[in-house]
Amino acid sequence: MTDIPRGVRALSGFFVFGACASGISFITLLFPGGPLDVLWRVNPRGHAALGGAGAWGIVLMAIVCTVCSLTARGLWIGARWGWWLALAMLSLNLAGDVGNALVIGDLRTLIGLPVGGALIAYLLSRRVREAFRPVRR
Image (cartoon, rainbow, N blue to C red; front, side, top):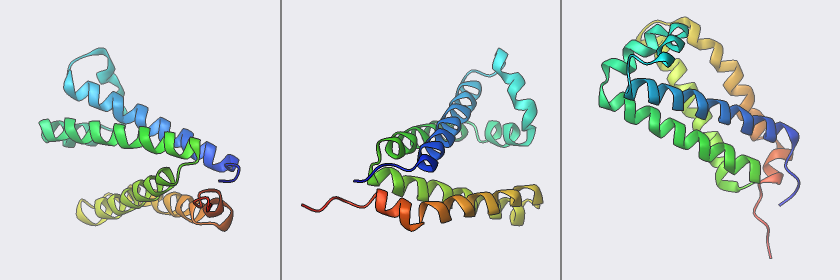
């Protein structure tokens, strides 16, 4: 394995942020009415949707937090599985953005398309792919 590009380290930080955000969401859904509930003012629709999903919303946030944490770690250490997880997470996020735009008509979610697309293109760039290429012995 070669040196990990700085952009991959930064992307790892992006997934740390995702893990923190989804972890806080998990906690506030698990223990509603606490002091952290004020954070839902940023996304009241998301709170309504996840809260309305009951236990499934809590489970979803736990899964997202876990996978974001694993992805951040995998990218940071230069593990090939981390690269694959990052591609999968970003692709799922793009699909979710398109789905939200089409199904519920929230066109604001489309801002995620160029951002997610750029991150995927970066991960698929030759330099980054080579950094995650398995070492042949």
